[in-house]
Length: 193
Image (tube, rainbow, N blue to C red; front, side):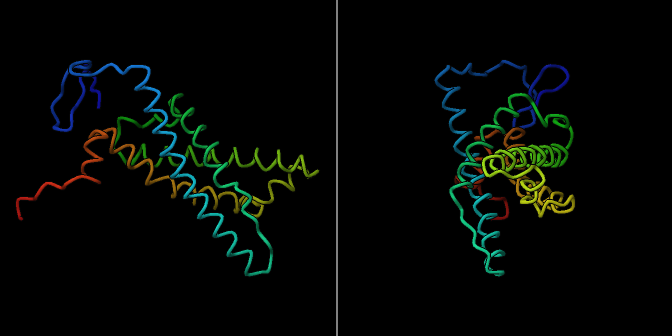
């Protein structure tokens, strides 16, 4: 975390001058980092959208209404992963970066849920144009088309994005490598062991 004096706080809590011991990334490393971010984000979003599709299938089949996946969960995941990376590059959602972690996590989850809803409305409108539907007929597929339905979808997406942003914010504060080691590596023994 960068302090006002131009230092960064390391995982140990010690402030070091910005630029000290920092490796300047090569274009190849930058591209590989972006690809890794895109793939990881796409997988996370695909799982989220796939679960939403399964839920929709189960609910509709209860009323004997057919539902086809048509591959949209993966298409939505790929498109929205790119949108999220572009929005991230524009620093969308960085407003509470220096506050306690709960603030940026909740804020980013809400902001990106709104972005997702807006893109979904645009997607449904474009698909509706090809099918000869009006915008109100197209938007009706989002939470039933009512304001309450759209807000409930936004709340679900906000909660579904919260773990993603929690891990990202923790990685930003303690370091991505430290977070990866804590989650996937060998855990250090506690003094009680």
